[in-house]
Length: 253
Length: 253
Image 1 (cartoon, rainbow over the protein chains, first blue to last red):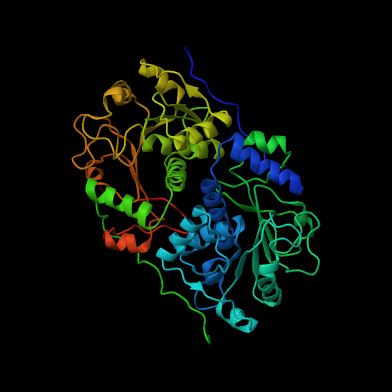
Image 2: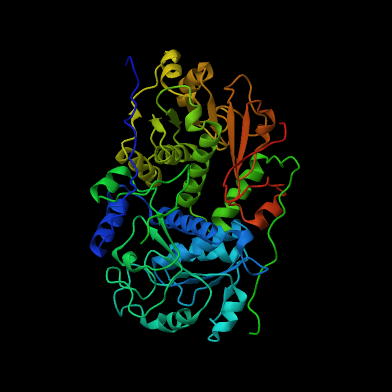
């Protein structure tokens, strides 16, 4: 050929408010990434966990931490959000934070087991129980990453065994970082007396419950989403500076 | 418990020259990550491909590119380096570059096939052949990513089918970015009249052949390597600023 192919320029980032996905849309998007685009679960969880750790470093930069040690408690549930939390903890360790993991209901999925092994072998401490005395948590950590329940959790379902954790997190006074859907919240309706995260990290794109988010910073980790998927779901993606995989929405919620 | 566990502070980065790994050491390290630490291949290839794309953005920032379009040719071989090249191309696309892939000998490994599908579905063009007229490549692209052969390639083995590509790359005048081990080089002895990359991206840690690298920039993408593995292989890891996954060695080679 006389000339080699080039591509048209990429997506035009939006400064408009994002689109908030329904539960069905979020599921359809994830299904499309997995089945049509052939992303692997291991790959997506790695991408998401890394992005969550990046959001934590932006919300709580090392020099800004109030405690002497850069401690972060990562609370992981039994499903996919828990696995993302494990990957987040591993990257936080690499970024010189001191994560501690509480992961009481371990998944039997080999994928989750491998992410657990990576953390264990990297000497990230695992708590055998969560202190019910909230002050112990407030004193020991700079922040809590809530990777307990996610978009998958139906009202009621899977929440039972985690009810104790949620009750504790509700009374914690250090900032909470929730992944995608704050634990105990409905994906669409949002909170009803549940936890109030300080930071929300939306994976792929914000879900409808994010409209009810009243915390300090809302990050979106959706840069990896292929342009055609962004277009199909009319995402209005934010502008990601440089090579950032995650960005704080500047517009008021 | 009265106090919750915290960790001792992390690895102390070295300003000394890195340790250069033998082929056996590089293999032993990768084996340890896969078998003991339970990293997944999909996960490692994602981490490495992302790091390679980050290195390309540092070596060739978008505003610095000589051509009107931010084109990059990514040449992928049949083995693991090729899969890393595919992931690199996908991230380059996300970073607003215009990658084009040449991937003549496609692996049957489902993992590689999935990485290929991701690129195809993201409308990254695949060349059906590499122009033998080198001037066409020089004119069309700002740089070439050499993901043809890696540390796995024995002298002779697997190089046959790629000999034509290597002959073309040897005469290309735009900068070449080689992943881990420049194609055609011996992991330990280095080059003997082969290609002369402008940029080298060492995965995990530099291999012995990197001592013979005379190009402009040598990046190391090893931040994800667990501290105990760094210590065991006496890596002298470079200092990674902030949350960077890749860093250029400042010391002269």
